[in-house]
Image (cartoon, rainbow, N blue to C red):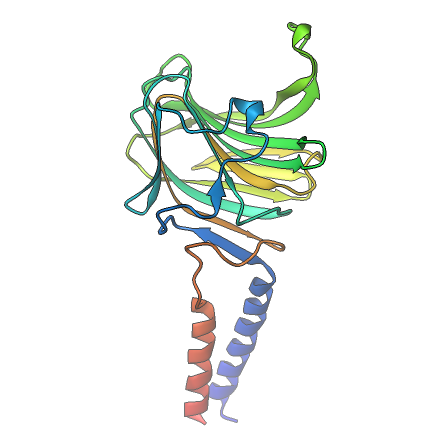
Length: 265
């Protein structure tokens, strides 16, 4: 066997090995190329966070291949849950986003929630949230990101409200943004370790309350946001979603390389 062909064989073997390891994890991609969002819908248990219905102050849907939320007045809220992705454990999530027209920094926020809803008791077993909100003092291009754990307890200042889900801050940092500029958000969970990043800002937290969960999005307030390329990978993540590529480019590369080897022989 010529040395050149032998080297190609080594490269091919390494490539196939890497490709095999990649195939262990599934990939779910929603590039919002479908207009009716068949995999998304209002989540159960949304009443805990102000209701899951679209009201007359919200315009939400797919526009020009992007998800678009527009809050038209104060105290608006919109919730979506990815039912197609289902319950997942360890995962890596990536999502592109762009803000516009933030008119009320005190009332506006965007939350990505990883939670486990118990169908039998009609309540959550655990909740982790990843939150973005503008600076409450209205400083231009200033915002905060947080990781919050939720726990069931009675508020000390209003015990008459009884037991309810309350957030405990796990990590927090500031994030500087520009309107009409695309950014990439990343969330990763491995065991009880969580990572949340936007740009150069990275947060870490630990939590054991959500052994397996689903992904939800919540939009609150008077602002506009665009989302694109919602991508989740993980050992128990199903291959699918409207943007899932049926032909893996790495697999195509392996096939092409094998063809070159055969031609040389």
